[in-house]
Picture 1 (cartoon, rainbow, N blue to C red):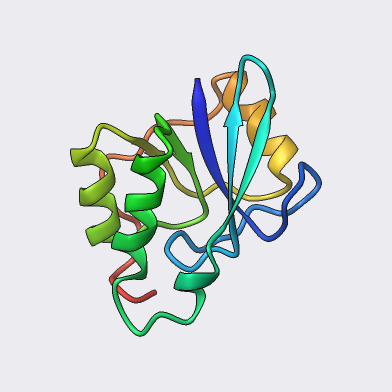
Picture 2 (picture 1 turned 180 degrees about the horizontal axis):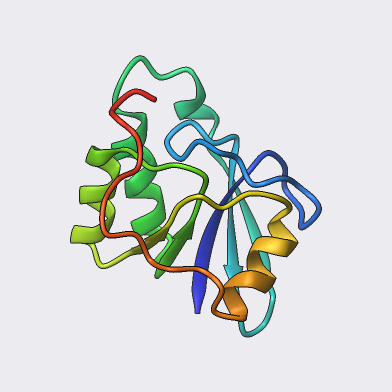
Length: 119
């Protein structure tokens, strides 16, 4: 399964970035092979608006099935869920810990956004 985790860096020791649309990086992880592909999100770090939607497009383009993140706003949440991406928010700690918890089934998928727009 392909999952994407918002991250402050490009490896497993990086912390989960609490922001979705303005996360520093997205780490695309294949949970079966444990292959990791870092995706730079630099174009959205300073975006005046639309960062969540543009980031959602990157997630869908990379064919991720699940997003693990700290927080996700309503526009990005709608864009992701309409594309079939399941979202877990409230994720914190290291990327490695987040992956391990996901594999153990310790997270619940979100049914709505958890922050207002432009958080």
